[in-house]
Amino acid sequence: MGLIGEAERIYEKLLGAGLNPDMACYQTMLRGYMDYGHVEEGIKFFEQISESVEADRFILSAAVHFYKSVGKGLEAENVLHSMSNLGISFLENLEVGSKLKAKSPISEPI
Image (cartoon, rainbow, N blue to C red; front, side):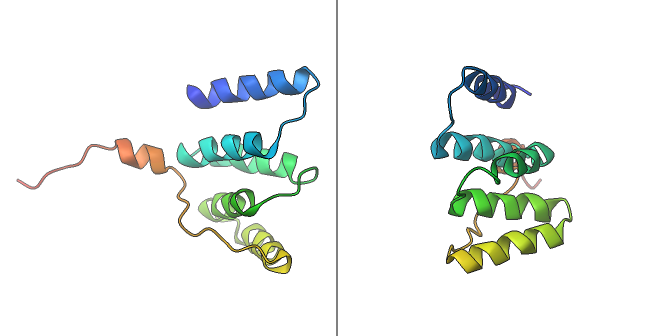
C-alpha cells in the first residue's frame, strides 16, 4: 500500500500512544485515500471518525464522493442532507483516484 500504508501505521501508532488526532490528521488520511482510490478504506475511516469528530466541508464532501464511487447513493444523499442542514457547501471538485489518473501514460495520436 506504500505511502497510504505508512500513513495508517503512523496514525495507529499515534492512537496507541494515547494521542488524539486533530482535524488536519483526519483530512490528511482522507486525502490520501481519496487521491489514491482507496475507497473502502476511506469509507471505513470516515465511518470510524464520524461519531467522534465534528466533520468539516472536506471530510463530508470526501465521504459523499467515496459513497457515490461505490454506488452507495443513499449514504451519499444522507451526508449531503446533513451538510445542507449544517449550512456546509459541497466540494464538487474532489476526484477519487486523481493521483492514479495523473500517473497514467498519455497516449499520443499517431
